Image 1 (cartoon, rainbow, N blue to C red):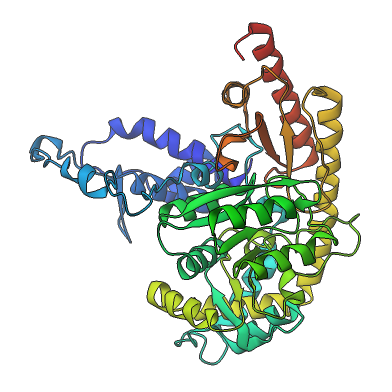
Image 2: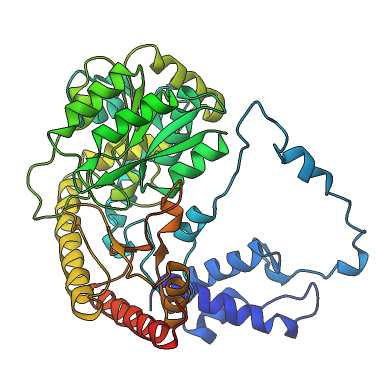
Length: 483
């Protein structure tokens, strides 16, 4: 049984048994729980931590875990917080765009599925694909590095900045790189630096929901620019700049999320030319360059490597190829904008913890790193092929216009009459979680879609079973006419 599901099951069992203990009473020892439930000590520790986070138990080092005393009868009448609705609302403010802070699209990806549910909506590698031993060894070595626990340079450790700069190429040097705490943080910093509240920002359509959440939380207006199999359409990008006066365009030129499209060689210079003519920045989210599939040909270079005028702000993270908790990312930019990015990052975060930066240097410099990338490359190709074959066999009505050669997801259009909320709910009842397409659009979507991830499951066998469950859900939905 996977560790995550074991923890969830043990936490559920302990939660159900809490009524047996009086308020303040002690639960059985960790050793007793290990023997009773036949799980590891780590599982017991994590299950108790889960209950503690829910406010049901309190753990005391050396003493054990205790049921929390019930103080509800003593609780005072809650205060009136309705005033916050007025304060937080931007209604009536005609001089700016209202901020909407909506993390629902992200939480669907970040939250662990219920026990027994196959995860087709995950955004990270399954634990079996993560380089856990290599990361642990890198972290151990990093902790012994001279000065590893001291204050790092605010821009990041020079050695790590140099490594990221080599990955971008072109005119980018270590002096143009800032180390950030993951791609989401880097994108947040970038939009704050480039776009004042109330201004438009051009985004691909469809696009990553986290980008839309960042923009809206900053009070920006996301304006969609359609994407096809060759990436963003330059004619529509130019028209959008002209119509809106936007000064920022955010894109994922390589294995775009969710479509998997790659910006074509013909369109790359056009995008840079159009942005330069508009006096605008291109934010290049190069998020899965290291998740290329084994059968892919040579990859195009980052847009930033072909940019001589400082148009591109490049974002590249290690997280997708390692672990959700390995949040190390690079921001690369040239010209005065770099100082603004640096200033905002310092104000918001000071710096990325030095031990994590040192661990990143140790990891990418170890022989285990290229071996890990080769393993992941082969695994992702196999999983992609398994899912594509299963979908074509069992769900031919779901249109798959593009099979990507990198990344971790497939983007499917639903048949007319099949609505994504109904299919998503039916799938979850059948034991498989999928991502509805609506959150990927900043305006009205042209059709119903779903996104299926093949990286967050344990094996190809689980992929096949997940598609079988999805077929069960689809058949039940279409048979009932509840579409």
